[in-house]
Image (spheres, rainbow, N blue to C red):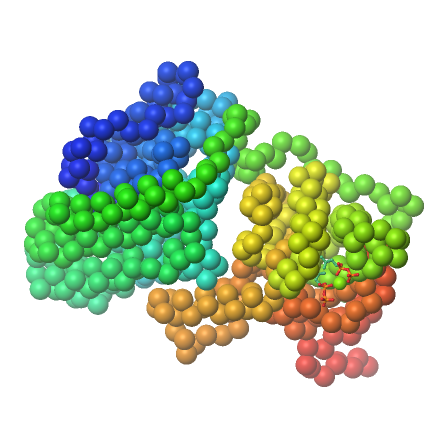
Length: 603
Ligand code: IPE
Ligand code: IPE
Ligand code: MG
């Protein structure tokens, strides 16, 4: 199908001057084959997706070759799936073969195929994790069998699964260059809708061509609302029902692409790319609406004037924005990555068991039904520990990281599934800058030196990037990606985390979903709220443990701890080791939990 093609096709025909003007040269050093590969990608992007091409031109010059490579790869896969010279099974096999070849090429660090050559170079240069594209590639493969969607929910999940991973790669590129296209948590829903809007716009644009191939990529739910419309369209009959259906869908697509709040707070250059994409799509939808029965014959296009009105100011805005931002250009290429299975940034070493406790201590035996699933810890007392030892406070934080490591060892040994550690709260910004810097440095050092790197630990970060150093955010995201396929302990580290902040953002995301029509506000239940939390799969906390002789929860996990067993100990955090965790779990195993019910008295 052509769903990713031609959002605003012929766009650059409106801009002949730009076509003649030489564009940025790929930073490929002296490798002529690589330069040729990137040139080919640029040509493909320009010819197949002129609308996308002009958006890539709004990116900083250093990122454009990567943009061309990604888009050319998506286009080639779409073409392999679409080309009518073969049966669906054969086309599916071609997509599969291309995807598999990419995996091998990534491992080899190069490719004989020019598109993959450029894509592999892009992935290695910018350290992109292409494994996240696997699902989208499979979706393109499966499109060859045709698609039936019962309702909008099924359609949306197809649309998001097929396109979002590609757009996410572009977002990662911006991130790597130091101009993040960061989405606020409460804007995730907007982002999904925006992508749905882009998809629907393309489907409406290419309606005639898709119908000629017997395809109608719309949900039954939408078609049922206009009886007879689908049959009329299939027979090339522009009936009142067909016209009403298209009008309805155009209105819907316009609502979906219109997400002004999505780019609020983003880097202005990155925001310009997305805002311009929205404007181009709206112009495209105007053209769809104005086309009438001609929609069934050819893809409508916005007028040259309409396109120029959008692009001229966008170019000025983006040029200014990028001129004000010093970008990070990648250093030498890093080793190869893989496209499926474990994440690239690279799970090269085998997992090992935790080192034994120096005294040979072993975990207690806890009956399975008495074992907590999730232990959350407020690691308090670093400062007082340092004072007690006549040391500056940062020394306490440094010593505290060793205790955190001990918790991980102890959790693995006792077989705990979830351990969540409170490392830096939204209130901790009230401390003096030097202490904050030292705390964040200690965390960063621990991530980089990686004492738990080779253990069976899936590391995650809970909190908000605002105000955190970019290198720390990058290191956290890197570890999250690198360890995401691990199945042992899930370790969630809360950094710049605040419970009220989390609740507020989640409520905002829910309001967004209601506003977008994804959820009926009258029917919102606890499950809906939980699904909109940053880590919806995080289970309730069974045991909340705080060290440091304080008996409060300090804005920690309010949603998850409503029925947690509380456990407070007087020791300072740097003094604990894994035996204290085992003691906490033993204590928990003796507690009787009621959850509001009357306890069952056995005879
Ligand atoms: C906990 O130790 C660590 C963080 C809050 C970052 P503290 O630094 O709060 O130590 P005390 O409470 O001052 O002893
Ligand atoms: C809670 O400790 C936060 C962390 C352990 C990260 P604090 O020491 O900041 O808490 P209060 O201020 O004593 O409540
Ligand atoms: Mg404290």
